[in-house]
Amino acid sequence: MLRTASRSLRTAIATRAATNKAHPFTRVPLDQVLPGFEKAAEQSSSSSNSIGSKKRDPFDAELSTLDNGLRVASQPAHGDFVTVGVAIESGCRYEGEHKKGVSHLLERLAFGSTPRRSADEIFAAMDKSSAIIDCQSTRDTTIFAASCHRSGVEEILEIIADAALRPSLLDEEIEAAKLTIEHENTEMRLRIESEPLMTDWLHQAAFKNNTLGFSKFTRTEDAAAMTRDDVIKFLRAHHTPKRMTVSGVGVEHDELVGFSRRFFVESSAALPAGTPPVDGSRAQYTGGEVREQADLSKVGAGTPYPLLAHLSLGFEGVGYKDEDFVTFCVVQSLLGGGNSFSAGGPGKGMYTRCYVDVLNHHHWMYGCQAFNHSYADAGVFAVNASAPPEGIGYALQVVLDLLLRLTEGAAKEELDRAKTQLKSQLLMNLEVRPVMFEDMARQVMGHGYRRKPWEYMAAIDGVTEKDIVRVGNRLLSSRPTLVGYGDIEVLASYEQLDEAVARRDVRLITPKEKKKKIFSFQ
Image (cartoon, rainbow, N blue to C red; front, side, top):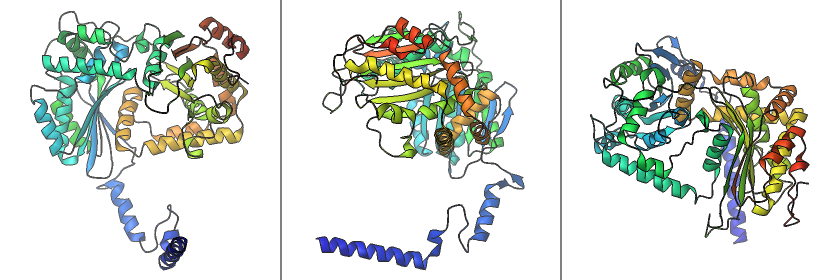
């Protein structure tokens, strides 16, 4: 068997050598044209960058605003498939005067029947156009979108417009959506992955009782009490053309504008009596805490998964319009992180501080990762960590020390690596058509135009060590936000944490009892 394997290896090497000798283009760098293909490359470049005589940049979006206030944005892309949809300034942050959780229920009702089509007819249209269709609601944006064959753009966009503006909201559909929410609420507490819950509680604590602090998830009892009228009031108040941006990647702009004029029109129906106005309040960061004492021993039952407790430590971040937004993104890249089962090398961020300074030094910590949540007017920056319940108090010390050391700056090599990693992630994500669609829609909604990635690349390159120090101090000047989940009895009090941040001294949150010697801050 050994001789056979050795012979196969020699054959493979010989074949590879012969191939390389016969075809020297296998050694041509990817940024150079293959020998003999110069003319084809020139023709391809000419046709891909122009329509007629008009030069096109891949990120050069065309933008139009219709008479009803609807914005329409498009950008070119190769291939027979396109991504189209509509982004709406809608979400849980606008529920101040509405039933809490109504935007979540509306998301679960998406792409049900409409006056024009039944649910079965919608599925048939999707099948005909090979469409993948979805609705996603975040705290400040709801997106109805589809990827489909370009031949089906007209019909799919009509379905999207009807779903966003004119859903039937049948009683049986509402009841099915409520059952879905009930199931999700139960299942979410049984997942090994705790990030969705931790992120929601982080926002509730950081923006207590206002805008971004409203829960993204509908409580089961609230969903059960919600009526069709509650859903219609929220939809008709927020799903209006002036709050919408129709976008398309790979669709001709004039064609997209024409379809938008036909399908995205003002609803002729009047607002139901008692419909509150749109809440335009600015988000107010408050800081605070959410503690969920829970028995997580059954989470991951039947798998070799350790019993863990979770924490999230956050501070006031910035909105994406703030001049420090890019620096905050670099800080997030600098900290990076993941969990103990992450695999890979530098490309996976294994040289970030959450790995090098946390997971590599504290073997008892399961995970540590930084997050930068930014919105139009506010943000929250946080680090999540997981550890056995006996060590969660020390994990808080480790995370706070990680953030305090931002005020000491970063070495040039470390900072350059973080910036390169961030630029790499930005550009690789923008190779995916649905991401290109969402990025363009959000840019147009937030900035009024499509910001090109080159603008962000230049801003990333301009971040210096002084910026890291300044942003670190800005971050730590706010009140902390603390979330704990699981068996968190040994976690320091919020008052202790607040004092430790103010004095920049992690010793003030040292757990009183050491249940096991393996857990320590040092």
